[in-house]
Image (tube, rainbow, N blue to C red; front, side, top):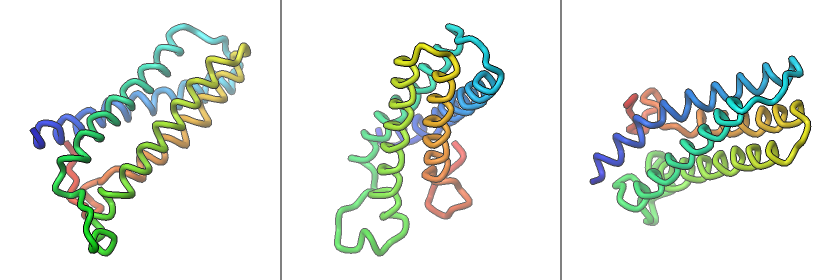
Length: 146
C-alpha cells in the first residue's frame, strides 16, 4: 500500500506541476495582454487546483503510513525526518490553500484582468512553495524523479 501511494504521489506530481505552470503562464499572458476570460482558461485553473488537491489527499494518506514521518525526540535533529514530518506537509498545505484562495478570488471578480491577476499571484506563490518543498533527488532527502 505504501509503495503504491508513494509512486502515485511521485508520478502525479508531474501532472500537477505541468498544470500549475500552464496556469501561471496563461494567467500572466492573459493578464498582461488584457484578454477576455475564456471558459478554457477557467477549466485550466480549476483542474490545476483539483490535481493539487488530489496530491494533497494522497500525501495526507502517506503522512500516516510513511516510515519517514516520525514523532520522536530526535525528529527535529534529523534533516530527513524533519523534512517529511514538518516541512514538506506544512509547505504543501500552505501552497494548496494559496492556490484555492487564488481560484476562489478569481471567481469573485467580474473583470477578466482582475481574475487573471488573482490566479497569477496566488498560483505563482503556491508553485514556488511546491517547488521548494518537493524532495528532489539532488537534495538528499530520499526522493526520486518518479
